[in-house]
Length: 177
Image (cartoon, rainbow, N blue to C red):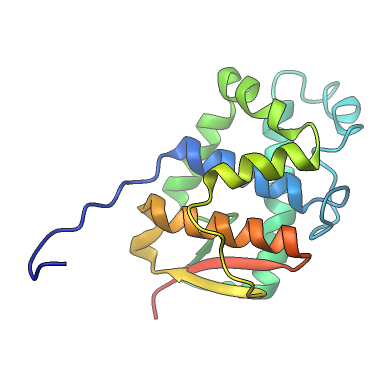
């Protein structure tokens, strides 16, 4: 790159993050790759959730899997100021993601991707820019400033995909060093 040249980076949009979060959340559940013991997106979950959350069952599933996944990520990565991952983001991100997930058009777009493990893994592959590494455990993918960079999230998606395919557990995270 030329000295002083500006490198354009595409900003991540909230739909990309919401879909990535739901796909990884679904794939990490007990019935798929068993990274966390929840079954919020399992076949029987709608039977349980619909009577209580008739109009917001996807939101209930989303928040349930988010908390289950965040707990496991936090155990591997740790929790602290300036440490973020797909399931624990700054408050502004979380608010935007919440508003997006309650939209019915979002719901109708994402639910077909959660029919089975293969469909979800194939969809996750569409989000990944790279194959990821064969690394296991916490993987530092960027700084806090990188949270808005789409290509860094695509790298994180590649790490998740590779981990699911290889039977490992990877936990991409952001932190200033």
